[in-house]
Length: 237
Image 1 (cartoon, rainbow, N blue to C red):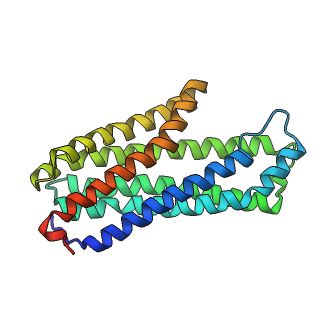
Image 2 (cartoon, rainbow, N blue to C red; image 1 turned 180 degrees about the vertical axis):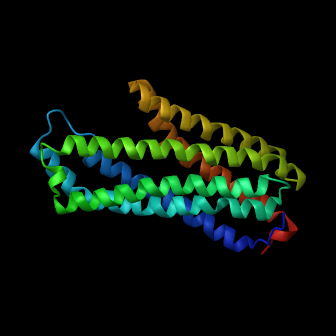
């Protein structure tokens, strides 16, 4: 497969935007869910609906940053292929899988951005008699998209390992990459199991793995990746 040269400064900028948007977006979305979670109380109250309307800006800002994050994730495969130059099917597969994972995330982000505008406008969908069904559908769709988005990225990350050995990447980074691939796949499966079974333990485990674990892994893995790329002659400044 013909590959292209990589500009380390461009990859570094891409990584900084991805991580900064992810960290700030996570804080904003967690604040939004603290102020007014999209899982309504039973019975639903006018006070809760007012809180949901008042939190629209937090949701909009947080998911706008998540939109940036998922677009950046969709492009990671290009940087990895340019650096690792994998042979055979691995290169195209990595690009497609990262793009798929990112775009699944984007679909969920767009849906939440639209919901934030409905919160702001006081849509009839948020009337007491309609809000439970609307919010349940919103949560279900976004959670399934989030669960599905982890699997392609995990497979693509695993495919990078053999090519990383060929270019002389450190054994530590390769091992961490394998662990990260398994973590992403496991996170997707746990999220799916939580949605199917509605078990509180699985729900809490899925939230912990997705909201806390994924940003921590991504930060460590991407920063280490930049260090490995920097050491390659073709990716220097």
